[in-house]
Length: 203
Image 1 (cartoon, rainbow, N blue to C red):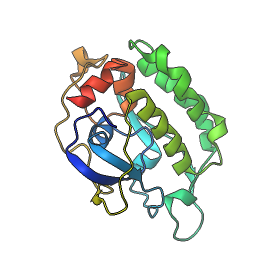
Image 2 (image 1 turned 45 degrees about the vertical axis):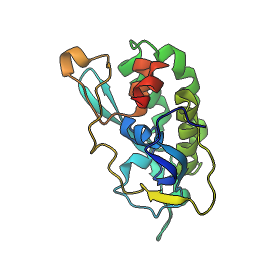
Image 3 (image 1 turned 135 degrees about the horizontal axis):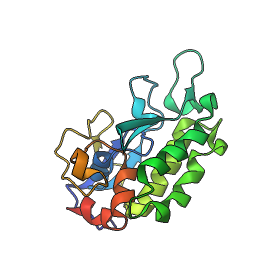
Image 4 (image 1 turned 30 degrees about the horizontal axis):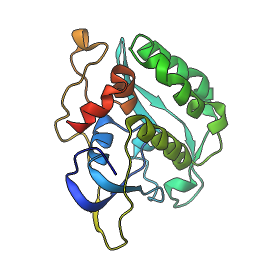
């Protein structure tokens, strides 16, 4: 059973896939009793969050991208695979280290996160990478769900803008010079707050 306060008791939510989704994504997710992620959504190149996520470093917000390869014709996201283009697995861990190595909890969590951002992910469906990242984030944030009956009410969050609601500020490494920056990957929350990220989400 979830220890987070529920906004929709007895309802199952359907979420879109995201790679290391935003703080707002997980802040909303933990408010449901049961959640499923629709990895079979129709491919839409405008859904950048399936293979991109935002972090912040000294120059400002940086977009980290896992390149993907799409088959010809109409496909679903589960048909799209992780590409080896640009050897992204070499640059991405370095970008995270540059941005977050001075945060209080980077060293504590990075060894659990780094294997997902490695060459081993090349060739797998991008939704599999999303699913593995999501499972890890849920474990770190202690987000658990209670399976509900098939006839439970459904809340469709697949087209939600998870950043439209006001996200309360939390401590960020560069907040003194840049102010609070919303819309970042949940990794920003985890590296900055560590175990207290759960308390923040429960507010």
